Length: 372
Image (cartoon, rainbow, N blue to C red):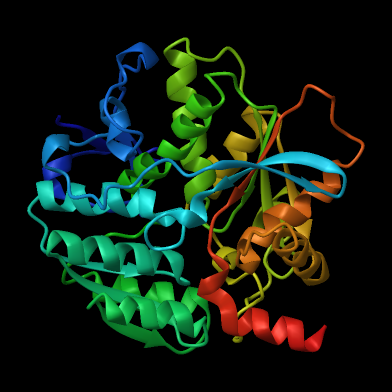
């Protein structure tokens, strides 16, 4: 299955075998790929490859996988609001990023790429390191030096080469881009193949809901790879006639790093602190695909919600008291549920995406408990 990479800014096109990750004009690239989806034609086990008809893989039958299965949609209640928690932290490496890494790494194999660079606050790093190990690809992972030790240990254990970069998330990205001059930049923040992997979550959710769209989907947003994957899948399903309306997409960010809110208000996002913020997974000051994130929110009638550290801590504890142990970034999405208390119709089904396992942030969570 041959696809073309296209620049949404200047219109430049690149054949996929050119292995470009960014346009010469500096913009990100999109994939000119229009799959034909029919739920009646689904076959095989409940796994990523169940949706091979919408994945831009030339040889899906040769794809490396961990035998991933659907993650549960679990009924929970927060702030008196019943929600469905999509428990993507139960994937192989402990976060939803496995979806994007599965697609990204397998596409690299098809393109003959044997060495990659990725930068991440943690979860993408872990996912890319694991799938690279599975596929025999040499991975160089760049992470901020102060981020969760559990994630850096996880990356090293997979055998990837870890580069700890002083400073914040932006410093890390600059170092990775410099290193990418000598090999392929498989960046989840830039690469469209990653989004075509993360979109499998909305296909799962829809199948679990018997192809009836929920009313609201609440997503923590840093680079936007999950929200944009959901938006991509929703557009594909609407074109196929599977759904007639979009659920409202709600993007959640931390008060310490809220570029979506700042953009809407015409303000610049302040520089990130040198120390990682509590919800480190969404501490991205300038998401490369900001325009697309805002488009997804606007086109679905959604909104952006900003939460405080206090709200994140309370949400993390509220989740744990229901037996679900999540990292602070996931708790940010839970915290946003309070924003909808008393605002929903009875028929509205609310989905909250739980993106990362609490075990990835246990030292930080221990500090939270000790200081509470």
